[in-house]
Length: 109
Length: 115
Image (cartoon, rainbow over all chains, first blue to last red; front, side, top):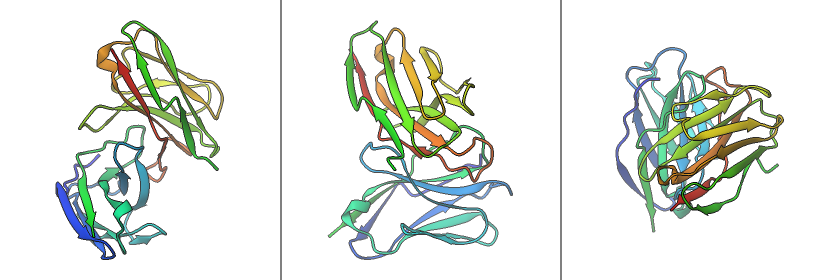
């Protein structure tokens, strides 16, 4: 699976959009971009995934650049409960998901 | 629809004791997984079951055994617990284990301490 690079930490004001970047410059054509989050040692929670096109669900939006070398997870109206570690994973399938160090997002009043 | 459930939530063992961690999913998924997460670290795959009746080793299988009891349930057994097995254990499941679009869904975890 391709290596991903994320900022170590980010802050966001409650009610504002949180934009979390991820770089995956060596991603291959069959690898999906996945986002999970982990709130205070709870189980990783699936957020969204995509291959080429931008995706949106009830939790977030995923914007993937045309060359697929980077992506942005957007939480449109961040709340305090969105404070968590967010993991970006480039995954082509198989059995083992590899979680890196992720981005610690802190949502503040 | 509970998703993936795990029992127990917490457990303290003495060195040499044995125990079984239970996992069940109600999403009719074919594939199930056991991971461990040590403090400040990423998840590491212990064992997985691509389909009912099959199990395979992950990257850190030593000291563990698994049983795919049926399609819903996948248990992890520690035969002789060691302090190095102190960790948080997560079970996950996915529709299949093949393609990159087969999302893995995780349970809440079991926090195990071995004294």
